[in-house]
Each structure stands twice: as C-alpha cells, then as structure tokens.
Length: 173
Image (cartoon, rainbow, N blue to C red):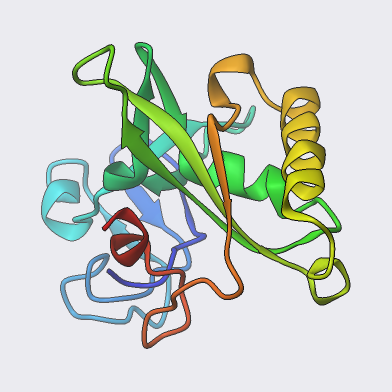
C-alpha cells in the first residue's frame, strides 16, 4: 500500500473537504496540490481507501486510524494494530515494533495479538525473558486486557519494505 495518510475529513453541508490529500488512492488525479472539495455523492469515487475511520473531536473531523487488513478480532473485540504499536513505541526499550494476529485455536475466526519487537540498541544485550516481562507489564498498564499481546517475539531487525515500512506480510508468514 501507500504510506499512511494523516489527513482529516470533515463533513459539511453539501461538500466534504479532503485535507492533506496524498497518493493515488485519495484523489483521482493523483497528488492534489490544494484541498479537494467534493459533494457527498462524489465522495465514494474521490476517496478510495481501506483505512478505518473514527470521529474523534468536537469539530466533527474524521480521522483515519488504521488499515482494515491490519485490524484484529480478539474475542469479538476490534483491536487496531496501530494503537497497540503507538503505545509500545513509547517504551524506551523499543526501537521498532509491529502487531499482527495469530489464529486462536480455541475460537475460530478470532485471533491473539502477537507483538514483534526490535529492541533499541542500548537494550539489545538484555535477556529476552526480562525484556518480554517488562514489555508485558507495560502493556497491561497502558492497554485494555483484550489488547495485551499473548505472544511477544524479539527480533534483531524487523523486515522492511522498499519504502522503509515494516513488512507485516513477511511477519505473518
């Protein structure tokens, strides 16, 4: 896919402005040099995205929060991988991390949260068990119980795509 988009959509009477439009998946003409405004009827043609959205502020802006294919279903709850990753990236021992789902053998159609971590250089010499325990405790303090990873893997280096994003396809394999 294309790099994550950080723009916001705001519904208005008769038109929907699309701010900070970037990438072919958001504007029919490719990169939009200025905010794009379109009628609600034209919106499905103008904005094609697999991103998940959520109303977040009092002004009514819609924020794109994650990709649909990266959302996990854990015991009937939706877990956005990006939310868990953002929390974990706040830990000083984490240089880079990714969250993917692993099938839950006891509940067909449900997944467990799997966290893959690339430790920061100053924490690479630490024992993996101690690092896992510390990260698990950090997750339990900062996340809802269903978002806490069931499995934590530590890798020397996470696989990256050609554009420098974490390659979740390789991590799922």
